[in-house]
Image 1 (cartoon, rainbow, N blue to C red):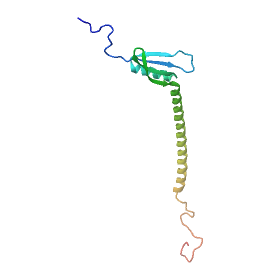
Image 2: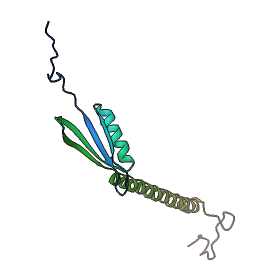
Image 3: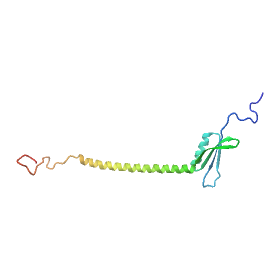
Image 4: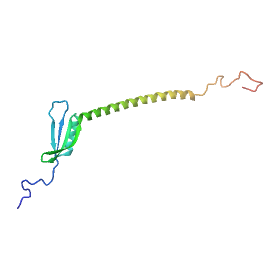
Length: 141
């Protein structure tokens, strides 16, 4: 009986292999190398290195020692963008709080003015108005 897997035959199912190289700019550290066939694990590790401030070069194997660049993650740029977004969110929060305080102060002022405007007038003479001048008993002119 003849073997189905003869020596030198190509693997019937092509397996994609991914590798990444992470370098830290400004550091004398050796680059971190990682190679796997699991794409999800590959992406997770690339994001972790980028979050740590590394420049990550993601590559996919073409076979025979050739690699194709799939993605390049710039960790320092991502960290800068994240810091800027956090600062913008803080500024927006401070502005929102200041606006709420202004609105509350304006509401208090308007409530005080409204309270003054709503009060009925206080009669001077116990509710019986008297005129200083009366012309022939016809009342106030």
